[in-house]
Structure formats: C-alpha cells, structure tokens
Length: 329
Image (tube, rainbow, N blue to C red; front, side):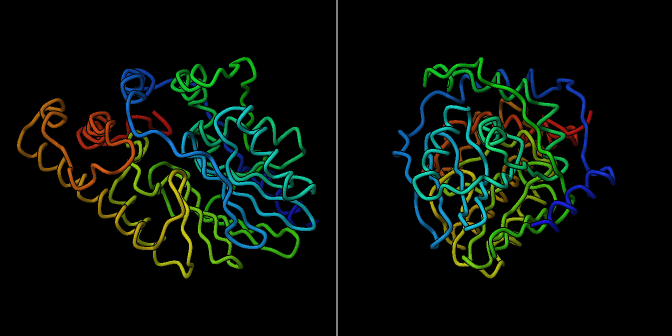
C-alpha cells in the first residue's frame, strides 16, 4: 500500500491533477431545458439491491438512480461511484458495513455525472482517497452547478436536503491507466478514450473476471448524448470492452450484463448515429429529426421516452463538431 501512496503523490507532483474553471456552457441552457421533460414518465424502477459478484466483490443495483460496486479485503474497501446525494451514499455505506467493517481506502469516480459522485462527501469523511481520470475531474469542477440543478426533481421526489451537497473533487487523477493494489487484490482503472464522456473509466477486476464500464454502457438503457465528443469512438470503446477476457459486465445503470449486451449497446449507438446523420444529410432540421426518428427496435430500453432530447444532443454534435457539454469551450 505504501507504494501506491508514493505513486499518487508523484502523480500530483507532476501536474496530473487538472483544474478547470466553473464557466457554464451551452449544456446549461440547452440540456437544462430538456431535463424536466426527460425526467417525466419511464418505467417504474426495480427495488435497489446488492448482488454478490464474487466472494469479495459486490454490485449495488440502484435502478432508480445509479449503480455502484465495492470490493472488500482484509486491508480495506474500494468503492466505485458514490450515488446521487449524501443520503444515498450513507445508504450505500450502510450496505457496505453489513459486509465489512474495514476502512474505506479508495473511491473511484467513473465519470462526471452527478448521480455517480454527489455522494463523495460521505466517503471522503470516512478517509477515502478519491480517484478519477483527469478529464473527469475537470468536468466535475466545471459542471458541478449544472449537475446539481438538473437533479432537483430527484432531490424533491426523495425529500433530500440540497444543503448537504458540496463539491468534493478527486484527490488523485490519472491519464490512461492506474493499478490499485488492496489486500492482495488488484483493480485496474483503464481509460480507452472518450465514450459517453471525456474521462470515461473502466474498472477491471481480474480475479473476479468482471468489468465495470460506468458511463459508456448501461444495460438496455438509453444514455445521455450531451457529453460525447464522438459516437464513433463510443462505439469503438464498447467493442474493445466487449473483447476483455471477463465473464461479467456491469454498467453505470441497468442490471448485470453479458458480452452480448455490450455488443448490442454498441450496435444501438451505431444505428442511432446513422439515423441522425442520414437525416442531417437530407436537410432535416433538429425538430424534424426529433419528430421522425423512432428506433422502435430499442423501444424496450429504459429512458426511451427521452429520445427527443438525445436527438437534439446528437444533432448539436454533428452540426457543430462539439458536444453540447464540451470539456473546454
């Protein structure tokens, strides 16, 4: 463990910690208008539950919010993503404490969506070192206010106190790969380039033959297209992920998945990209595209009711060359 601490200190000393301004962008005005509509409707979520993936690896499937994982060892606990609010994080911590009383050593933030990191204060108070890819940290800093704002309906619906929220950024960042050693186990943090977001991080647990994909993959669940700089890269990332020598795949949303689920998700993204690209080539406007693109073969996916918003976001990317929420303007 001492080696890891020396490494993390060296990373910080070499300037790998990224500071970003708090300027708002097109994302705040455009996606902010879409968010209230996007939060309406949709399938009723399944009850939250913990699933044991391996003797020391647990998956928290929180269908009404976002997923998390935790690995328990004799030396301590590693947590992946911290939920959408400190109250949610306390629930997650309580579930961890049913399995282990060891200290929380590491928290990994897979991407910069608030439902995956707004619980950070709870785990920071436990003494955890928080880690993310450097672009994720930059986006967390830049879009914190936007992330809080677009989750107001969730906070109200669950009677959660906004006053508890505070921005807690990662202590350590990495570029393409970082290996964490804890209690004789290894967690490999891997950045294959941007997928759904700049900074997307995969976590490979070799001993459990499990890959956590975070933002780029959600089993049978439409994802937000406002952050991706390239759907082509997103599709390529998914196909590379599907080639990992593992048995279990878990996304940022949705239940435990298979390799076939990941490949289907890549296909869905590719077909959506082709549909929007073809409409633009035909001279259709953003609203004409949103009125006509239906993708019925994926209508069983969760968040299908948000399709109009995703058409808007992808139209913006393809006509401007920039994501609706770019890392830097």
